[in-house]
Image: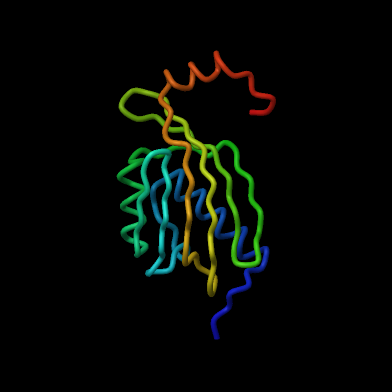
Length: 139
């Protein structure tokens, strides 16, 4: 029998595994269904993948370096969870930053669909420009 309602514990474990994947680039066991559907929206582009292997390739092509997720927010939904993250990483001698919102649909304890909305990657110059122009109320 297929389970489409996700309990809090399962959703939290999967969200933690997703963060680990973002930070290391290594796919944790039991995170994605083999036929995962990824719909990844960038500021000026959109990518899709129809398998876990292709989704991992999309990630590693865009973010080949390991990084950190210093801040995240997790909300469980009936069909899975929402995860908002900030990511930082070092690549090609520069410091990078992005924010992403992810909607994960979970079936039988694995992510079957993942929609990602990304701000785009900000290099250190863009981050400095933003800090100088916009006083944030919260980090």
